[in-house]
Image (cartoon, rainbow, N blue to C red; front, side):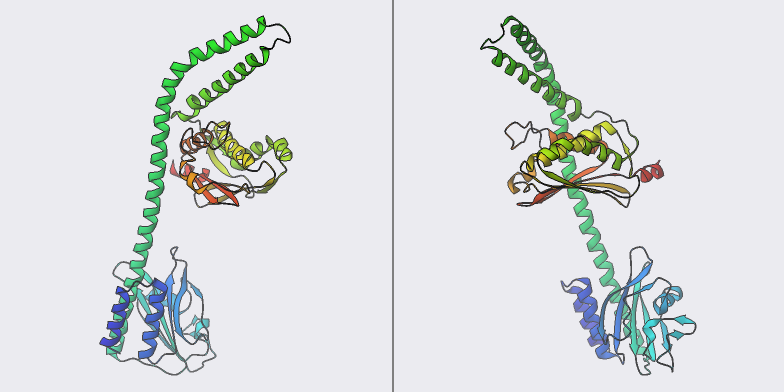
Length: 405
């Protein structure tokens, strides 16, 4: 063992292999050069509560998958902040100097070496032999260099993962900013439309109502006038939708139960579910799901998502509604079996006035997105063409909001 193995491990650091593959090869190199039969790399998990096996080489006898952060020889290495060497005559024993370690069963010698740099403790490399094994000072120094190189593998992998996570988060933020810009532009346009359209619309509706009164019963003009009145009502609803929810208006947030809100929303659609032969599967978290909400606005947001699901399953299907608590977020998933969204349309579904429906306004999803954004939440889409679509809404969990105040 010497420069050859150090050179091999150095080459690993320059390779494009994933972390587990690099550690597995390094373990094999170590066993080829040292009098041990098993080499295991244990990495401390992100919470610092357990050592988890990431790679090993050699025999799998007494191969432990994980240790608690203070258990066994890995825990002793962490406590001492240095190497730990064990030697026992009784191979059946699992205890060495008061430390119980099931991984020692069947072995006489063991050496656990820290994986760390000046700032961070990453884990240990754990070597075992059924015979008495010892290392010269030069071999120990070389093992220390390899442990330092392996630590660099882990640190680089952590940095790469962090970079990927930040990149994903930035992409989501860019999407949300783009959506917000569209909504702001639509708000400006809505103010202009409201000013230019509302007064003539009221006049049209008023004159159509008067005209209906002047037409006698059974007049052939009655259906046309009634159609005009219906279209006026539809346009008024459209204007109310644009001016009432697209503009960046404030929400009145109060403590509420997300499960209760969803139950109330679903109850409104009981008749439509039956009419369209849609089965409902509820998978709600136990107990109350605390969020800070403007109840009426959230109901509108979820109404729109369920209406979309019903429209995609006109001839029957299954709708699954689930709620869960993930870290500091409350999550609602609404999954339908309506065949999904055409891939070419997926990037436009939150654009105002974009619709594939004959009588749609294209405002349902933009309004929903606007409401969720005002609640400091996020709406995501998982599309499975030919099967269905899942809308996933995440909102700040109430306990997190309290702790942040």
